[in-house]
Structure formats: structure tokens, C-alpha cells
Length: 79
Length: 498
Image 1 (spheres, each protein chain N blue to C red):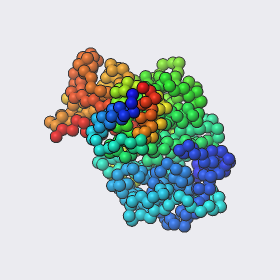
Image 2: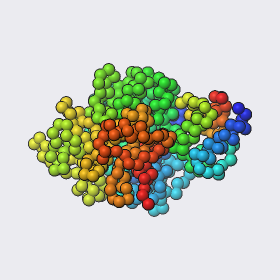
Image 3: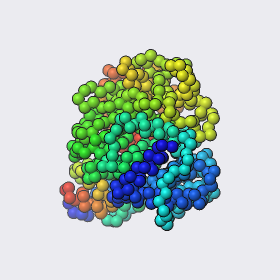
Image 4: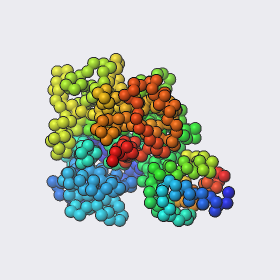
């Protein structure tokens, strides 16, 4: 899948879980920068991503997700 | 106080060993003793001799842990203040505990409080090593933890050095051979008493403490620590393995030799699956309120035999050593075997009482003649019963015993049946006010919305009508409180009537 498509899909998922669109997806974006992205919504985001991309994260993947850039790379590596 | 002199000896003896691994960085006992000594100097010069309760900003760094030891060597108590907690809560704690001085390792100044003196503990000049404790009376307080009070005002639980020493003496029987090669998990926020046990057990034995950086996701980070650093001892809350459950087949940690659970109900089914991930570990389910110093009863999980459970919840076992636990009825008399009542605990681990809170103390502690001795018992608020062989079975909170149309209902029993039907899906049942001041049973299921008719049909075959949930909600992930337990108060808000 094109990186751009991944980003679009990710945007939709984030907006859905967080119930707002006050963020701009960049590689450097971290959970801290986004309102409502706490440890609980993080798990929901992970679950939504798994479902929507039909992928499964390994436990080890979860610790690598330090920013959105890393998240996109991990998703792409599984597609 | 021998606990503190033991700590002093251990730090000295293990100087070349690692004391901490914090955010992938190792610190030796020698490094620790330097930082402790540096902080001691500033405590001596800045803090009034008559000030015993000292605030401590709970960061995840060496200075914060060293501050605890420095305070103890000076015979003072620490009162943890979580910088992420609401300021009003921390303020209430500082006020109640009469705190005038706060130790803080933060590099930026936290706008914590105005009238208290903040003592910075980071980057202090090196001084000579001084780990010799002052003379500490055994009734001196080691720490005061504030737990949520039902009225919204947190209440302080002081634990004395004697309480703590009794705890460690009792615990040493459960896990006798901790040594300098051991690597121990410390997953708890310092405002939770399981943390005391998690850092002090390794430090007393020259082992290494592995902490969780605050920015990391706890359960996945714990797994990496266990696997990459080959942790040998792990003290956890059960919700960790509930989170890890979807990933159990990725986990294989043969190095773990000791795994203790406490803090909330531990379910046998998930534990049995988890035990395969840690094939060589002794697994213990333990129990204890903050008021009785960390844990006071324990039950060994049997890998090959039947384990005692009630509604799927593991037994909490027997008293460890210096506590006396009994199950009492409404008249405070001990109940017979098999009868559920409130668990009450006496003995050397019991706190001298809530900090300056006479009303609460009168309600929570009582004297009772037990086997010829006049003992002071703490009412735990936990509903339990004792079986023929003296093991306690946890039933639920006394306040989770809802009265529905006059019937007593154990919320955990409803949860048990729901989980049995839904298979590996977590559920919490709550007693909610239906707006007409009647109590009803509500159910929150941790999943996407599903058709609940088959579930309700199943429940009807297992429970009387008055126990049936009348309201059901779905939530993808249960909210946790700062102690890592399922936050029932947050869940109840889902049902708030307007």
C-alpha cells in the first residue's frame, strides 16, 4: 500500500477513536502532541489499526511506536 | 532499626553490582550510595530537625529512589507526590501531612506548591559517603501513602519501620534466596505500596531493580524487560497478564523464578495460560491492603494440581507470619468456616492508624479478644471466607455486595458467569442507582458491541432473576486507575443518571 494511503487511513482511525481532527500527521508527531491520545486510547488505536489494515502487531512492535513515523513503518512492514 | 542497617550493609557490600536499570541505563550500588550521601548532606542542612514528613515528587530516576534511602537514614518518612496527579489532590496531601519540605529531582521547576520549600536533588556536588543511619525508634514512620477516601478526601496511611521490618521478615519465607544476580521488576508508581516491596526486596539483597519509564506502555515494556534482560523476579498486578493475554504465544521467559501477584482479583484461567510462558517460576497470589503493609496473606499456585478458587478467583491463602486474619460478621464475632463476612487483620504489620483522622480510625479499627489476647484489628472492607484447611477465599469488596430487592448479590459472581460464557472477554458488573434510588445490576463488557441475547439467556440458567444485569454497555478497553487496577468509578459514570 502506498504510504499516502496508509496515512489517509490512519487519519480516519485517529479521528474516529479520538473524536476530533485537531492533528496533522507527520513522522515526528507523538501521542503527547495529540489531545486525548493517552494509554487507553492508544490501545484502542492499536486495535482499530489491526482491524482496518488486517494486520497483527507483535508485542515487540508496540514498544517501537515512538512516533507516527515509526507507526507507519511498522504498518507498512506488515502489509 | 535493623531494616535500615540491613539496607546500609547491602548497599556497602554490593558496591560493584548494579542497583538500578532505569530507561536502559545501569547504576551501581556504589553510584547509588554516592547520590544517597549527597542528598543526605542537603537534608541535614536544609530540613528542620523536627520535620519528619517530607514530600517526594515521584519521578522515575535514581535521585528519587536515593531520596527515599537518604530520608530513611535520617529517620524521616517520605510522602510520595505524583506530579501527574491533579494539583488539588497533591495539595490536600501536603496540607494533611503537614509537609514543609519537598524533594524533587525534576530538572524543570514543577509549579507544585507555593508555601513549601522545594529541595532539588539532581546534580548535587559529591560528598564523602555516609550511609550510617541515625538512631531510629521503631515506631518512626517510613512512609505515608494517601489512598482515595470515599468522601473524596484522600486519607493517609502511615507505615512504621517496625511494620515494614515485620513485613520483610514474613516475606523472606516466601522468597528465601534473593541475591546479587537477581533482576527484579519494579512496575509500580511510588504512590502505590507494591512499589516499596518491588524496590526494597532487591536493594536489601544486592539485586538490580528494573523500572518502567513513564512514557512507555507498561505491559509491552515489562515483556521486553523480562525477555531482553532475563528478569528473575516479578511483582505484578493481575491486569498486566490480562493485557498480555493476546500475545501469550510470543512470550517465553524461562529465567523468571518468582512471580507474585497482588492488588486485585487474580483469575485462575488466565493465570494457568500465563504459567506456560514462565515455566520455571514459583507463582504466588498474595493479598494485603496498604493498611497492613503491602501483603499479608499468600497462596502458592500449583502447576500440576487443583487450585482453590471462588468464582474463578484464586484463593489468597493464609497469613504469612505476624498477622492474624479472621472473618467476622456484623457483630464482629468470628464466623464459621465457609461463611462469608468481612476480613479483619491484626498483628505487627498493621498501621498505627490513619494520619490525624480520628473519625476514620474509630470506624476502621477495633479491639477484640482473640485466643486470650486483646488485639487491634483493621477492617479491610473485603468479603472473604475461610475453608477447612484455613485458606481464605476472596469473594469481593464488602461494598461490591449489592443489595437488590433485599437479596445480597456478589458482583464477582455475575462477572464469573459472564466471563464463562463470553470466553476470554473481560467484564465488570456494577451496582448502579437507577435514578429511583433502587439498585440495579449493570454490566460493562470489554469488547465491541455484541448481541447480548444469547448471554442473557445463558445467565438466566445460572442466576436468579434479581441478579440479572438490567443495563449493559460496551467499552473497547477498561480504564485503569494509576495503580493499574480497573477503574470501577470511571465505569460507573457510564451509567450516571441525569
